[in-house]
Amino acid sequence: MADSTITKKHSVTVGFGSIELTGSLHHDDENRSLVLETDEGPEYISVNLKSCGITPEPGNVFIKNWSEHAGLTARLEQAGLVQPLHELTAGPFGSTAYEVKVTL
Image 1 (cartoon, rainbow, N blue to C red):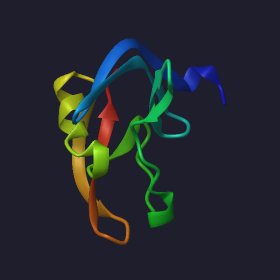
Image 2: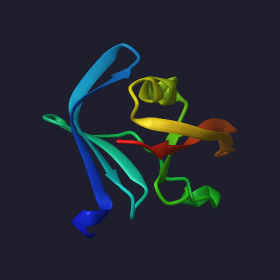
Image 3: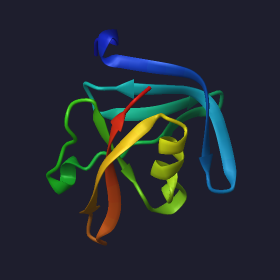
């Protein structure tokens, strides 16, 4: 993986409902992933939906809207870290996810 495909933003605090985590936000465009690297380890922000037959466009990732990630897309948008593009239904339970443009 080439470092040129990874964009980082340091000292980012992300709210996950009842907890907040602070770390360095890493966007790997080649692998379409967004990860918050904390002192305790990685917290995966994006979700891989290849098993559902879909891949986000370049510069974008998918963020699930269930479990501890419910409402996460809106919080990341308010922080200026992503721009939601569209909502989609994924998985066997018809869960909601969002394709977002990463704007670090």
